[in-house]
Amino acid sequence: MKIAHIEVLNLLFDYPEGRRFTYAGGTCTGRVTSLICVTTDDGRVGIGSAYSHPGLVYLIVKGQLEPLLRGQDPREVEYLWERMYAITRWYGRKGAAMSALGGLDTAFWDLRGQDEGRPVWQLLGGEQCRDCPAYASALLWKEDVADLADEAERHLAHGFRRMKMRLGRSEEYDRAAVHAVRQVLGHDGELMVDGSMRYHLDLARRMGDFLAEQGVFWYEEPFLPEDLDAYTALRGTVGVPIAAGENEFGVQGFRELIRTRAVDIVQPDASRCGGISEVARVARMAADSGLSFAPHTWSDAVAVIANAHVVASHSNGTTVEVDQTGNPFITDLLVEPLQIREGKLALSDRPGLGIELDRRVVEQYRMSDPLSIPDGFYSDMVFGSEGLGPPAGYVEREA
Image (tube, rainbow, N blue to C red):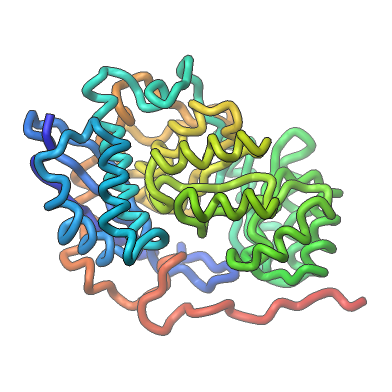
């Protein structure tokens, strides 16, 4: 089996005016993602996903990595990962280069599984197929927190038992929002919160005490990802686990999170941090330090499935994130859509990732030029001046 061709499929979706959502970053106008399809000389296709600047992913894969990889055996996953990392090290190690090579790495795992007739979770050491715990990721800002309660009810009706909400608006709002969703979930449902990188240390401790009272499952990104000192100072001072990692890349980045004792839960993402290989390495490193991992996913269903295979194969894997903001790259991209039942994402025992792209959906959203992206706020990526920065300053409670 040899690599014959690599295709990069850059996708863009614009939210209709009435379906846009607002959170600490601004108002989201659309979504982008990049799929990577590796075709072999015997006609097999492996699928991966990279969540980064679409144009950069395209240039790195097509301009530099494809010539290196063409004619290689995709089943030599570890060897190819090292080759790709070595050739991009001088400008990579973090950011778009790691995300791009990670999308290829995931496609190679898919092909290895197809060749061996085994699912990726089994290749990674999983002993038996088990559904992967999953949570609904949504509950963005609402003018009326009662609307958050209504949304939480919908997630429950769709099979979720865990869900994550975004805070960082004001201290009054954040507390009221948590109360509203907790009442819907009751004592059995698990609630995660994302601080949206908007807190300072004293505020984070104050909010952490409140979240502990509310039985929150984890407390995510209260600070900017670079501020490891704040994470280290917060962890252990509030009664709720601290989570971070969606903005980290590679083992070297997660090693620092773990070495500094900054978090209780690490959140690598196969579509961002270096592929399935790197998520598995981070999972093992976390296990060695007594930590759990819960992958971030905010791009597409390929990434959700890739991360879920790693979670299902490691005993310290906690759960996988499933975007519930009306993103068609989550809901419509696969021929067999993601299935959530009783809080779990169904994983099959089909070879590789066990998925197939719906090519009609791919063509519907495919960009003609990944270097020419309409101005807008695409959740994590901003093009043009609209949507930059938080929409308003954070208002704390009076002492």
